[in-house]
Image 1 (cartoon, rainbow, N blue to C red):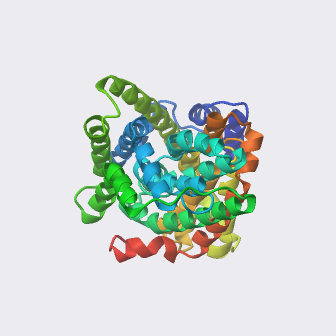
Image 2: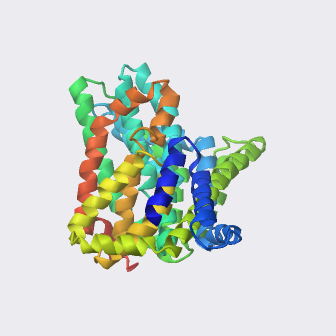
Image 3: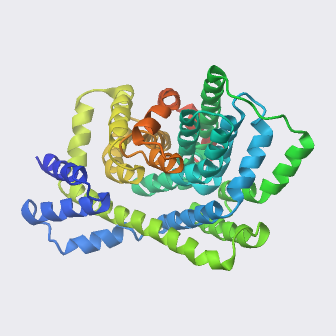
Length: 427
């Protein structure tokens, strides 16, 4: 009954268009006022304790780094390098978009930021060269989802903090699945381009490729700094995030000089706006998790699922369906913060590895970025092209089906996620 009241109120508030952070907080306050003896004075305390975790500092730092990189010319240089490597393949600019999104995802940690940075350059270029609008939207919007799978990933940080899992191990677990998904998205892009007869770019010399690599080097080096630093034990994931923010500012201001000091206040304000929004959602979700735990709802739901006798295979199937449905209604951060505390104990009880489960949830969030009505990547792509939500939703269907196949692969082949962190001794 308690679960029905809580989730019913939350769903109704979201259905009328209330922001998720406000909906979470209002749901809990209303429930505490009428259905539980827990004092309302604990609301502020639980919201503040929910965001006072050291690991959460990684979020604003990664956002700041991504904003510096998006505002500067890093994306443009990565696109040129990607185009020099794969532009001569059928559907050249589409293949370039997939590789460029993968590279930018590895330094930004954000899916919408990846779509905006790469799409604002490549989508107009594709349209100018005769590619269909659907192909351009589908390629960039879907490949932009790599921003939350290929580390560093803000969604992975939230999962790790929520479930008390190692951020470093989770980052490493996303590397191999990320590379496999890049290959799969590249394959469907190639097939779509060949099917519609789209052109390829002229093949460039190795000298030109080397020149493109040199120009993109300082941006690509950030991948080595973050991942290498975490693996080598030089700094934690949170310290790596701070390091990436400083490094991104330095290369934008002093190396590439695509930004001036006049641009810095705008970058700081944009980053602060995004960070404050996320932290408000985290604080409200912490309050929601507190009342769930107080009413023992996760424990009862976990026992109910276990009593069904589904086993790991059936449970993961149910989880994927639930997360895909949630992805249609909420953005990834909210889903992680609300559902992870409920699903995680059941997964552990069934013997599912916490790191593997984190990758499964992340891939589901990635798919949710390109499913209507609230897929953020669809809105970004729509803003770039002027296409309606219906057209953008239809445009991503071939890539969406590919990602669903990839989800099955990740779900039932845990070695894909766990091989690298186990080999590095991080588990």
